[in-house]
Image (spheres, rainbow, N blue to C red):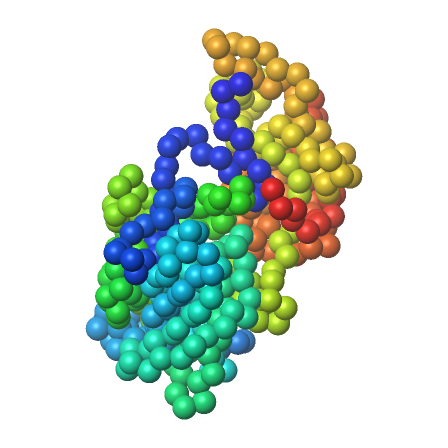
Length: 381
């Protein structure tokens, strides 16, 4: 069957797209090339502090750099298993609060034996991992900073971002400490595939130059607020090609406080696999719209299975393509129209936790049905 299958929480792309983890290695600069290239990005702020993006100050890039520079750090890592990536590497991070919590990428500190955090003034500290979430590529590390005045970066509201807004990054590309680049928000609400099989939803796309060593550093708006953590680029060569990705600050605000408190974050889960409705499928199924998400498979004993959602059992081949003739089509969640899978994943990420109810409006055999599911903890693929 010629189709693209997407898990709720994970997606398999239809085209060949290479996402590169942007982490600068010390043994001659190299890039690990799984299917993801992670670069810097993440948001920081004192706990409870939130900055409205409606209060526009529009500082210059110079002013933003000067006010943010002391809150951005270089993260050097030595790994337990050098065969994982390399014996060590360099990433970025930023100060989250005045107790010494620092935000970076999970892939930066994964399997770390030793973590050294260095500030712009040259002061360095050993750090320990407080919590991490590989599903959103966020990690919290902590230093004992009794002798240093910390500069937590304010966290903005990524939900208010608009395409075309100017943004800037500060980090350590290729180990070059304290480097700034700028660009615009190219798009919002992207899905970023990961090796886990689950995708990071609601991701910000930017053309601000992001390179290995930028991983874990902040993406800033023109108010100087963190609105994302730079985490990946799309590239066929491993070098920046104008497409970078950042985990949004809305995700950071949801995940980080839990990581600090418990060390991990448990994600809500539906338990279905499928793909977006396209014009060809809409024609075969005689649908009025090519919007929606078709359920191909329902995972056994999942919330979807318990609620009675149905996957595909019958197909037909037309012009060498196999089309599903049945299977529920999700057309809305909690009253929000579902155009494609990203609408479901963004809603889960922004608004739902384990144990929440979610109202699905589905199309089954030409009839619209309302089904309620109770979200459970996401299972490992």
